[in-house]
Image 1 (tube, rainbow, N blue to C red):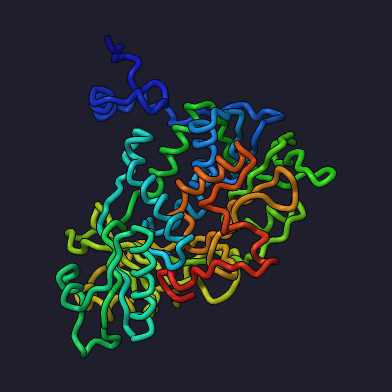
Image 2 (cartoon, rainbow, N blue to C red):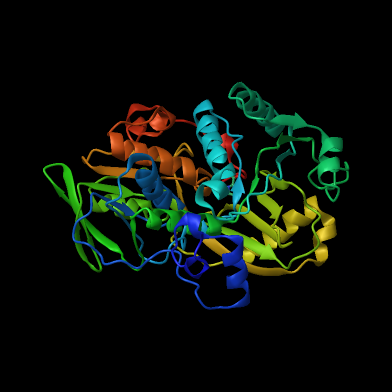
Length: 427
Ligand code: PYC
């Protein structure tokens, strides 16, 4: 017999029920934090720097798949306050290289099952994903991507303007459009998800398995002795650890520098914006690389827009009028009917761009210091699979096949992965 007084008291994934939800719905009592505030230990088996979806997923899969629970996730701010909470929550696996397609497809598979896995409503919506082509050159790239996708078993096809109009009735597909639409890459499995719910779900699940989550804990140094990592220094004291994972975005180079590891990464702001909510009318995610814009409609009815990265490297997360003006012009070129919609908010996140637009994952020249960085504009899409593979890397000491192409040594060896052609927009 279930003791209803205990329902919802513990953050463990299995404890929630319809009764608990009803009780929480009618009273504000008994809401407990989804994860606990724990004492910061002076030693952990694994320290993960960065409390976004990558760091939290790595901690979760370390505990869940490998039984490694003496793990601390450190974040200098709050969980999900960086790229995980600032992206436009788009999921897809229609990349250009076989390495990229297989990797992001595993991520999509994990995302599809995430609500059940974590017992947390992450609001995954398989809307389909359209990447428009406005020129012969981009149509050629779409065809190329479609073929690679199909070979890897990923649903993806080039469709023409009349099929686009059927999927997005508000789209201007006439020849009079300023940037006429010649076709699109259609990827039915793509969609959107609620990004902060993904963070909270992983955090709650990791916490319930014994992982320690420490917010407001900034890493200020990394100790290395005789080529091995020995621990981290933080604003709350030193922590000894034989394994340290850099799972930061925006600060990836600064954290790696602390261990003496140089990364071929430059950091750029990426701006996004959201409108007031309107009735649902946009079924799919729509992307135009030429117009540097992507748009989707949330379950609440808001339109979420993103663009290319700002044209200069910076750590600023401020919005700019230039971005808003460009965004409005480009969105209206695609869907003139949106002219009266009001923007509510705009913000920016930081993107760590690598030379080939593929991530940097796995071991470094410093024993025990691993990286999961360089995500450019693809980081959120990769959260679950990055967590799963980094956890395997830490637990077994071997680099899983799925990420073997993404090693740091590829830059010295000239084995670049070349994923720029799959970017939603030109950068
Ligand atoms: O590559 O799909 C993408 C994307 C969406 C937002 C930023 N990048």
